[in-house]
Image (cartoon, rainbow, N blue to C red; front, side, top):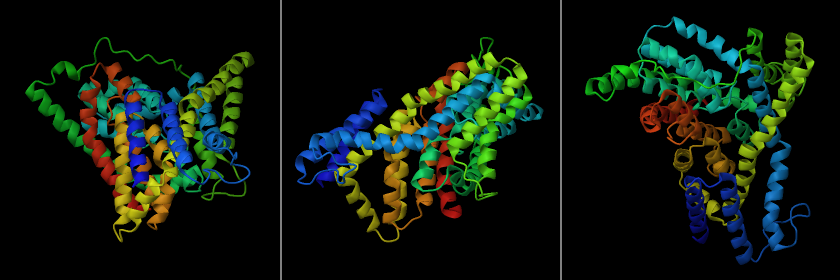
Length: 462
């Protein structure tokens, strides 16, 4: 019972700090360290064992958890995420991402039915999210390319904004930080997780969300226009509408660059040819080098191309400060929760419920992710903080880890799309001059459908 109380206090305290906008990585780290210190004080046994882990000092053992997490994460998961971010920033710098979105969005201009266009735009955006894993970056690009189209055919500004906010909801693809972490938990490659885990579930979920957008946004636009909540001006592009986007235009051939890593990973995998072992970081670095060489040949300015590649390393540093540090500190927090013994007690209680224990465990984990993502506005913060519990939870109820982890990972991103303080919500709503609260009022119903469908589809396909 003492352990469960410690877990509840730790989770509530972390939630309070993050909601109050304290620096999330340090908040997780501090609470984790406090829990570890408490257990080191009252436990007769040392927290760490083994020559490579233990320090033989209770004080240094507590700090050693940070060192151990850093060593574990930086070598694999952290490096992958940093290289992905560097590659994404480099493609932004040379205009490749914008070029891809311009080409992908072009067919939408031929669709004249407002809400059919809206549904198709959502599906297209979710597909592009596989290659552009940044929710904010994708949102800004879609505001530039798709938002004017949606308004021009008769969608309201709030319906268009809601659609664009949800385009990154599922966090799909081997380049997503949450996907990489889930693949690591399942001891498979990110591409295997994408193909075997995410794609079957995502196809059904995307169709369900697109259909919900079609009917719900159409119904709400008609109702709000009749009630006076919306006016005809809300169906027009504002004269002050402007998307500040630093991505420059690039040759059409550059639009292939964001797709190359996915193609490379798919080819050199169990799905096509496994004779060569190509890791995620290796594939990303190979594609960075290829993109650099093509850019050199096209611009014929070696100095300028070398200047552009600086954005690759700047992106690596940026994501270390924002995401990798969050993963490390979330690991320390999870270690603190585990050290109390409360997590083991909860998991054992669920495992003892014959037949229903697995479902209850899944619903509890999804509930935690939804709440944490909603109040923090970050799917990463929520998933990183609690994902390490998933393998033990799945094993305790005899479930395959993918059946437990896939819906939880998807739900973390879905819940972010319902949060008025999420970065993508604030950015997109501000550009369109729409209230973030009005925007999420339109995203919540489609995302609730997405949550239910993704959980159900995981049972059917995984």
